[in-house]
View (cartoon, rainbow, N blue to C red):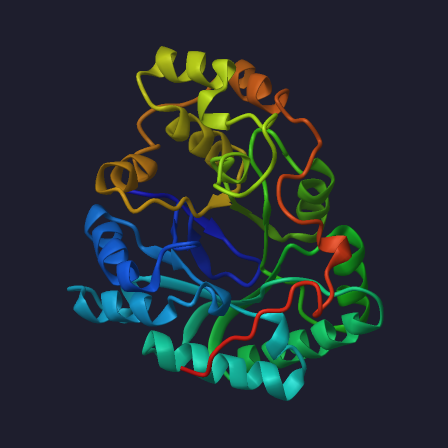
Length: 297
């Protein structure tokens, strides 16, 4: 069971989806199949993850219609520019094995002179939306000033901005901006995975999963720390895309609708915000420093 969130164009998005960031391509089909069998009806992938084909394979295996699953993917920065982004859609739809993508977004902003590539990429998204090839369009990791310029030069307000949000980095300024503009905040790293991913941070980093405040709230409700964090997001109106390849955790991450956090508990979690970003700073993005070539097939 999951609730839905209305986008600014009337399309509805399941409030809890399944993410495949860092899922190896050869494990993706099995993991997504497990998620679909557990009841997930929204899958988030990206060209940069290298596993769109695995998502497509799982969709073909499933005893579900195309309309049953909300499918989101992202264009990478090396495919920005009007014609290149139109081609990025064709590559993504071929790998996923679908004619229409529910939500197609730009994976990263660009800065300085290169920002024009992102603006042209978004113009391509507007064309895809007008042509009915996508049901909604959006962005990821865009900061307030990126959104301001986008809205100055383009016509369609993004339906979604997928951003880093977790108890240790609430990203409050951007959440407020989204509320003002009618953009859904979609949380990547909703469990604070960026605080414990291998290779991220330093020896002083703290794991949200081991946070004592979250642990006490979890104990009070008889749930896990991960379920508390996901419920925190959902009650505050954000969409989440937790990732796991462990079947029990996949099921647990969807099971966040049988309890409710009190206002005091929500405030306790809000108060854990350090104001410190765990992932890369989008204000520093250029094609050179975020370069990753996406293969054609």
